[in-house]
Image 1 (cartoon, rainbow, N blue to C red):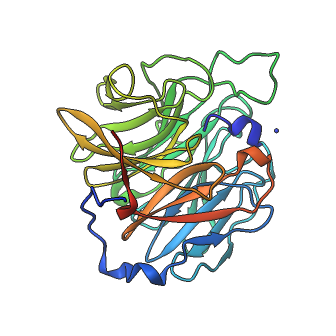
Image 2 (cartoon, rainbow, N blue to C red):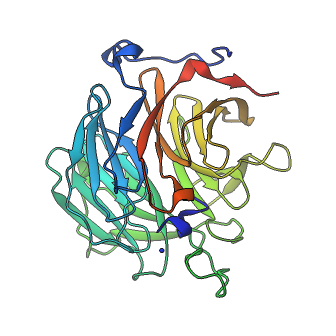
Amino acid sequence: MRRIGMAIVAVACLVAVAAPAAAGAKTSFPSEIDLPETFFPEGIAIGRGSTFYVGSLADGSIYKGDLRTGEGEVFTQPTGGFPFSTVGLDVDWRNRVWAAGAAAGTGRVYDGDTGELLETYQFTPLLESLINDVIVTPKAAWFTDSGTQNCDPNIPGLCFPGQVRLFKVALGKGGTLPDPGAPGAVQQIDVNLPDVYFSNLNGIETMPGSQELILVHNSIGSLFRFDPETGAVSPLYGPPDDPEFMGADGMSRRGNMLYVVENEAKRIAVLKLDKSAGAKLLGVLPVPNADTPTTSALFGSAVYTVDARFSTLGQGPYKVFRVELQLMIEVE
């Protein structure tokens, strides 16, 4: 999220979508879901059934709602306001909500039913990084650091320190959470990509059928494959062979289809992944009523994105938008 610094201080069906029966008819779901007036959202994730979660940049709390009814409420306690914000979210198979803790340098884990805080992992000291997004695999939770060593001291509030790296929380047998103080519970893994400017590494996803991770490099406007076992990095999509993303932020994946939020363009890019050929841009999903869509989550025949409204500096109205996948517009 390139502008998170400011935020914090037809149409043809080109994609075959397997819509779960549990999703029901698309007309039974609201196209826009209102969030609390001062919530200042950024990350979104979907849990069991039609439950969704959205994190707050304003105070670090998490909102829990229902995609079917549009109703919900704040279900975790605030973490104290800046720098104790909540950015990216993910929900694992045990219905635990993982939250990236922004400039607090943390990753937090909540019970998705009760909102109880289960663990907090301190990756870096306060204000020494920007923990931006998270993805959970059967073996680990992976967090991106969007910080940079190239902050301009003459532009305060628009940049956060840090490095081009990931933080790994290794899960135990059956997905058990490690003790935050246990040796090896948290590992820092440097990523061999350029440190350009904030925000470097941003969104994170898994590569289908592989241990590899997909990383958004926001400053370059590209996607990369990263093998956490070997440390190997390889291009997946972006310049010079492909157009640059316009503010690439969060990602979500279903099978070999990848959805990348371009917050500056107010749209979601749709790409088809191929292990040998990389990624091909098939089209885009416009989010016409949004100011700054940031992250996304898939449910049934739609992708949901949250509007952080960065251009209004913390002023709503804040919404979650439902975008039907069959409304994708082909790109030339």
